[in-house]
Amino acid sequence: MLSESEQQRLADIEAALRNDTRFVNGFNRAMTRRITPRRVISVIIAISAVAGAVIGLTAGSVFGTVLAICALGVAGGVWTYPPAQPEQPAPDINP
Image (cartoon, rainbow, N blue to C red; front, side, top):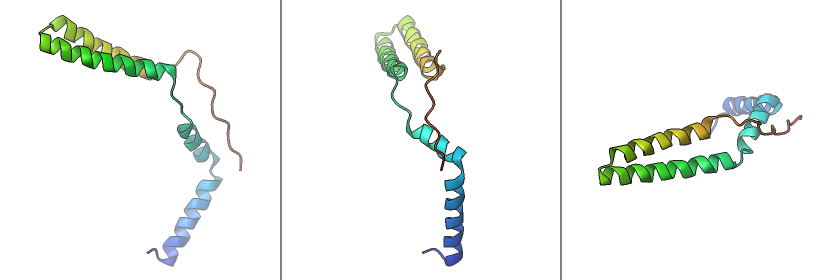
């Protein structure tokens, strides 16, 4: 149970956050991220690369394993590299 002073402090924090449009807009942008084709492709590449590395290791193929590890790096690059045309930002909320 919170004391009365703690409840008042919590209410003050909530009121300050409600009035902070930058915080609200940032939170809304984080919640509205969607699955993009770029992310789907990178996950497919990563899963294939892990499977290729396991197959390469069990078969004793150094070249196949190195190639699979490089493909894993490519998947990470596809995931993190910014798109040529950035997504439209979420609309700002003005209280």
